[in-house]
Length: 338
Image 1 (cartoon, rainbow, N blue to C red):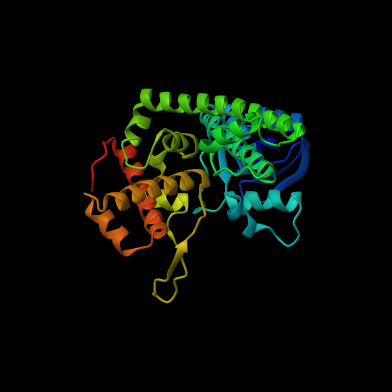
Image 2 (image 1 turned 120 degrees about the vertical axis):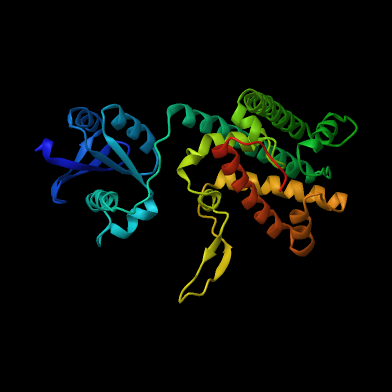
């Protein structure tokens, strides 16, 4: 029976995996649950076929394993699988829906990421996670000391004020507050050391890698944003145009078009959140510089800032930056001011 299987649709989980085997004529040959070890054995023994899964947690690991055994891997976005679920939601229905979605001729699939690419993503998200943790600790310390009349502005730059306030012996801070404040400062210092080391590694990579160095020449894009593009974006040659890449990031208007009338709304936000957020942050820094200087040599940007609110202009500039990234990467060209 295994030789007749055309598609193996797998509903991924931690320990129990639902596998739906579909024949060449589209009939379901079996739909049963397998353990992790039995699934690995099945992928090794099954003759080459299509292995379909939802693009979710651990899907790239199983995709690489299936590819190593000669299978064709199709990762279907979860939003595209949902319309094919019949009635009740359970593992059997999900596996069958994955098989149905994978057979659609116009379905879009997610490219399987290599282990190296996922390693970059882990390093990037670790950096972002530690930055959030440091911000949380600083805000907690600010809040505790504010109860005793010691107020400091937001951000790591004001940390020295809190440190001096805790070290001031003339203040009437209780000893337990000073002790807990020292604990906060110690944890913040440890996180800062790791954050700076990871940031330096990203900057060093942007200097040695020609692709990252090229992206850093775009105004508003630095080593962190360039590293995020390298970590999270698939091969940009898979996108037909820069607009498709911007749409993948969620930087294009949401459509409500019908009857030949184009109706565009706010940006869809349906895409890669890490790159989109960094592009908008970088665009805001460019716009603040333009406002501070009172103009820009880029006539398009100057006119945009003059007639639109800053956030609207930032999203529009981020959209254009995404298109620049696609053009520069696919055409191997350097940045040129439009």
